[in-house]
Length: 319
Image (tube, rainbow, N blue to C red):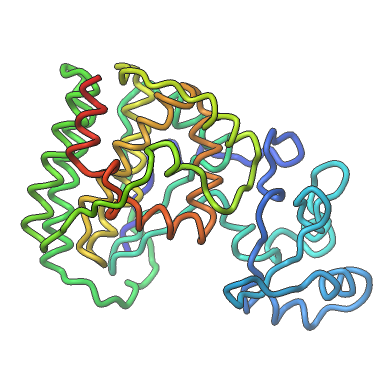
């Protein structure tokens, strides 16, 4: 299998108890079946603690019930994980072991990156000065079974290279790059399948008022938003590149490439309006990318909300 990662991927290191916004606070963690099978064989205090906090969420998933202030029940007073201490990090839930990493499998190719939802990863990507580049490595893992159409995958792979070229062309102002990217997305969508943008009436800023609130600071950001022109800062290029890397090729599954490109554009508008720093995009990511409920709503609005149509986004980019 070919493994594709950002050039900085191996530099990421969790800072554990020193983290300014612990990933062990704010959201429930799914207890995957392999982990549950292992926990069933334990005994003693840690076994009793695990059993006492297992619960079900609204989707029927087994989760660890949160403690006060939405803290994971295993997060101790030093912001360290008692489960990790008791049985080792390799036996914590899959979500905990992987965070903030994400994986996209495309048969013989696996792509892995880190999410803005981790403040350390957010700083790494936000402060990157060179263009976001990627490293290909060959490993011994077998290809993953899939039902993706090979022709569509190779078509999108070629198109993504052009998308990166558009975003990373520093000879052109950032707002113009994003407009070009949207026009490119409209053409790509025509080549894939019909895509009718909706006319749902919702204010642009209400898009970001998620039903599931993880950090109240995010509401403060929305309430103090300021409409401004997109700057030519390198961090805007990096934000757009992150979204192109993470989501573009997943259109091989649903043929909705325009929504993926809109995400890259809106990602830049998020920091433009809500705060030009890594903390802002970190808060958005934690609120949205790591909440199934919020992300499902966002994906629907990308296609149905008039304020997120390609034409409306291009108007915002011309401010």
